[in-house]
Image (cartoon, rainbow, N blue to C red; front, side, top):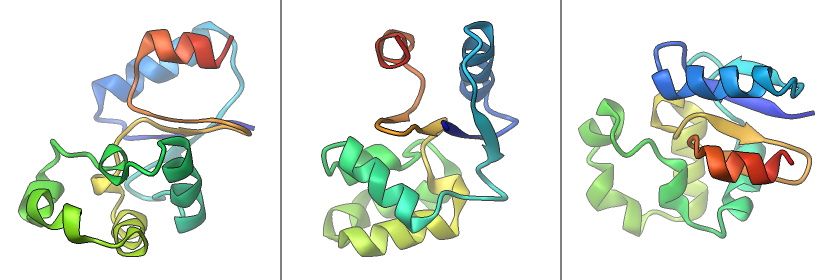
Length: 117
């Protein structure tokens, strides 16, 4: 089953969910702020993103800026970064989509079309 973490106030998340529903793709939706991805899910996503930690972070978010993560992120160990993300769903790039053998962050319609083909 595919799990999609979204934030109701996010236009990109709403577009992504609409896209999935229009294609009748089954998924479970979870509110990212109330129920952030677990460290296990974040670790899986990190593997799907070729170990690029920055791709998991919502770098345009207020929490990211307030925490000074732009300067701190390059020095964080992966376990530290994943713990931060698991503790604060606002830090996680969204939509955050985990399937049985794929992981997507953000909504790129072309990439999603290839992934869900």
